[in-house]
Image 1 (cartoon, rainbow, N blue to C red):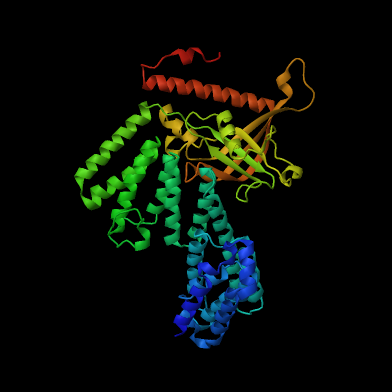
Image 2: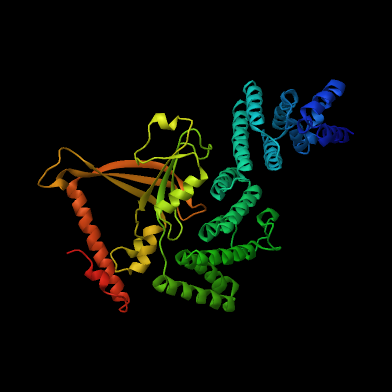
Length: 510
């Protein structure tokens, strides 16, 4: 009886004909004058009934979490203030009656329903603020829920902020902004170990990358799904199977299917080294565990083709750009943050800058590469910094002190990197008329990103930056080392392929 009562009253309260916000001001005024806001009265009845059912409340957790959430999301301030405390009562109820003394069931259900409701267009900034405020007030007055309740209140506020930003940006013309917000949401669910929702957002991100022909990033996105699976005959949990996929019975079958798709994307993105790495895992399974030698032979043929392409195919390496979004006029996920971007093939600074500024037509492009002052960071406008940075090569251990062909090393000069440098010359002391380089120093800034490139995005936030000054002598030594390295690379290329022109060698400075 109570269950029917709750669902009937919620259905009445949330019925579209009672949502006054959707009417014109004139019609809204007439309805209020004649009938009042019937949603408020019904909401108060739901609240009173909830508090009157006493110990029977546990029978309605988690089934009533979603319906109560629908009520609290109705954009009527008094109704929200009176019904949001029901959430605290649910937390308290589960905490008191569960053996583990937690409210995990309530929390998981609320997160699931909140994601669905906000994606469906409900919820706003005022709701986020009010939900956090009311839950914090109630939890801080409770002896046992003060800490865990406060953590949940702040967690829900953080989730709402990300979901609202994601919903706002879904209609944005910039796919990059949509990708950023999608990653913010999926990272939240990854931390909360909500694999069901996490995987759903992974596939949203994959589709965005495919629309932009970012095949490498699409591959790395799918790899996150594959990493959740084992090479075993264990049944695959329903939430691990993508909605656009056919039914798969075991984790091994799904993982193999994902690996095949990932390798295909890596091939399109000319990331043959990573494709070989995953192909070896797949080949090992077919050789040692599955004994499918026909499939193994196909995999080895693909690997042979990838090795050949590494040595002979034309593969332009990407440029990297540092971008700073300074000023309060940017969205919160960009505001006063620095990012490193991985360019597309043949994309140079000028083209990249024009594309970037087209997304923010009111932004001012800064000419200085130095960190901006508080006057710019706290200004209401938008200021964009954009300049080229050089990735720092980390030679794999297996290649050290060996004559490795340049075609192989060249991959690592632009991939598997998370450190980037920008060098700016400056004069220290007075200029020497006999040797102008004697007082010419280099200020070198090293940026470290949150993740390595390539990855699930074509850009990652800078997590730390350090500055060092390079003396004229050290700069001269570095210049000589670079020239020697370039000469050595040319010699290596000639040794590997005698058909190459020797003109580059003749153009080397003496």
